[in-house]
Image (spheres, rainbow, N blue to C red):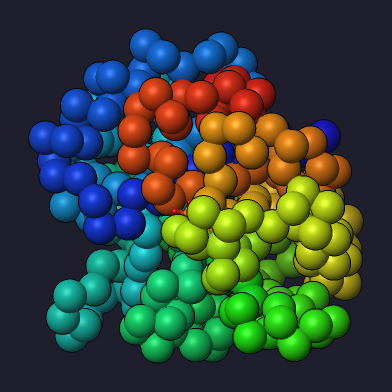
Length: 253
Ligand code: PGA
């Protein structure tokens, strides 16, 4: 049985003060026992949010990292720097980074390997565009290839540290969600791909769904056998709504 993983992706939202206020409001609202919870704030709020969450069941996550250990990479942040701040999870290859900043599968794979080497748990994002979805039939093949290429070089012995997020691009921030059945179909295909790559370790890898998840639609998605949590943008920005999502994901522990 995989423990559900619910992660807030705040994107470029919230100041340090707002992150601290969020933590103070969220912690008393959390339901007991169940899902693993994490919040990925902007880099600037990581240290303060880490302090505010200390001793709570909510883990710290980051939204991105550079594959290099150090060097002349202006504007970038290395995995070890995130580990030092107490991050447990790091999102890798979100479609906004792929689409807006040109991150390729190769670059994402290098990032995933570097994160694992630093003792961090990557959340590897994949998902098809509306064009691919409309073309019909081939979406699973496209997304599975993207997953395989984004995991190139990952040692099988570390595969259980991975999480995967299936985020159809047409569902991100649009209010449109994949139906639980359609999402389950894609998750099952991704699980099969993971079995091919890593064997039995694939059973331990959480595959999250992302794309307009909100209170009211999370429970039905998470009830599917291969949907093991959610990566949530918009609905994670409000403590009441994130707490409600935690309850729909089975509580916190
Ligand atoms: P959304 O974003 O929940 O606002 O659709 C999800 C994501 O981009 O991770």
